[in-house]
Length: 406
Ligand SMILES: Cc1cc2nc3c(=O)[nH]c(=O)nc-3n(C[C@H](O)[C@H](O)[C@H](O)COP(=O)(O)OP(=O)(O)OC[C@H]3O[C@@H](n4cnc5c(N)ncnc54)[C@H](O)[C@@H]3O)c2cc1C
Image (cartoon, rainbow, N blue to C red; front, side, top):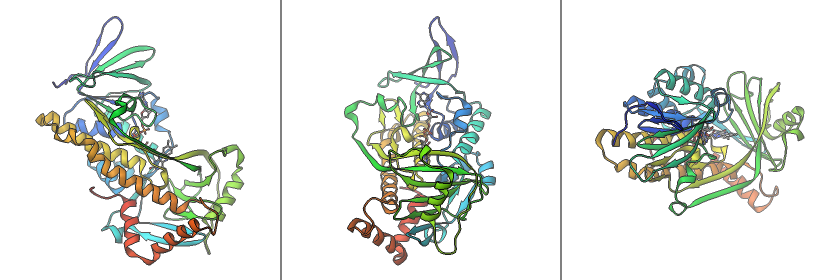
C-alpha cells in the first residue's frame, strides 16, 4: 500500500490527514529525513509540538562532522552554513596546562569539522522544507500511535485544541529523548543502556571573539573546561560542575576566572565579554539496541543520548536518517524491505562507536578521582600517549571528524 495524497478530510470529531511517511519532530533528524524523502518524490508531514520560533532559537549543539556537512550540501541546504560556518582542521587537548594539537586533515585524509550552531542549521532546514512544500505542523503534539503492525499505521495528534490523525504507510519517530516514539516499542524488544555521570556542564554563550582558532578540551585538577565558539564574535565555553550546582551560584566574573584557570597555558590569554546565555546540562549516555517495531522507526535522540564531550548527538541523528531514508526509498521504489529490516543494526554500529568515543573523551578530560590518585595518573598517562603515538592521535582524529562509513 502506498498512500500518496496529503489531503485533509474532516469528519465531525477528528481531522484526518493522509501521507506516505508521518514524521514526529522538527529537529535535525525529522527535517533532514523529510528533505531526503521529498527529493525522491515521497510525501511526508512533520509534526512539531513546539512553535517555529522556539525550535529555531533552541541553543544546543554546534559541531558538524564531515558527513553531516556533505549530506546537507547534497540536499542543497548549505548556502548559509558554507558562508558562516567555520571549518576546523584540528583540536587542542590540554592536561593541567600542557596543550597538544591533534591535526585532523593530515591524519584523516583531508576530513574536518565545521562549527555552525544547531539553531542556525534548524532554521535553514525548516526554510528548505517549507520552500519544497513539505508540511510542518507547529504546535501539533503527537499523543499516541496505533496500527504499527499493520500496513496503515496512524499518528494521533492535537493542534489548537482539535483532535487530528495522520494515516500513513510508515511512522518516523524523530521526537527526541522525551518523545512518544520510544514508548511504543514493545518493552521486550530492546535492551536499555544508561550511564548518569556524576557531573554536569555549566555552559555560557558570550559576545566576545574566541580566544582560540580551534576548540580546546582541558583537564584541570579543578575540573574539565571546554573552549568552543559559535562565530567570529560569539564564544561558547563550558566548565564541569556538580550535578546539584545551580546557574545562580555563579557570577559572570567567577565563571571567567574559573575558565582562565582551567584552560590556561603559558603565553595564552582568555578573552572575556558579556555573557548572554547560561545553562547547566547533565551528562548522560543512553541507548536502546532496537530502533524499530512494525511500521515504526526511531531516529536520533529518540533512541540514544551521548554526553556532549564528543560532539556526536546531532551528527548521530543525521546519520540515522540517512539509513532510514535509504531504506524507505528502497521500499517505495522497489517494494523491498531488506534495508528496513536491517535498519537498527545498520545504525547501531555507528551509535556504539559514538558512545565509545564520547565516553572516552568524557573520562579523559573530567575530574573524577583525587588529583595524584591511581585513576588520575592513568588518566594522565592516556593523555601523554597522545603525543607519543601517531596511532592514538589518528584514533582521536578519525572519531572526532566521524568515520566516513561504518
Ligand atoms: C541542552 C542540550 C545541549 C546539547 N549540546 C550538544 C552539543 O554541544 N553537541 C552535540 O553534539 N549535541 C548536543 N546536544 C544534543 C543534540 O542537540 C541532539 O542530539 C540533537 O538535537 C538530536 O536531534 P533530534 O532531531 O534527534 O532531536 P531533537 O533536536 O530533540 O528534536 C526532536 C523534536 O521533536 C519534538 N517533539 C518531541 N515530542 C513530540 C511530540 N510528542 N509531538 C511532536 N513533536 C515532538 C521536539 O520538540 C523536538 O523539536 C545537546 C542537547 C541538549 C538538550
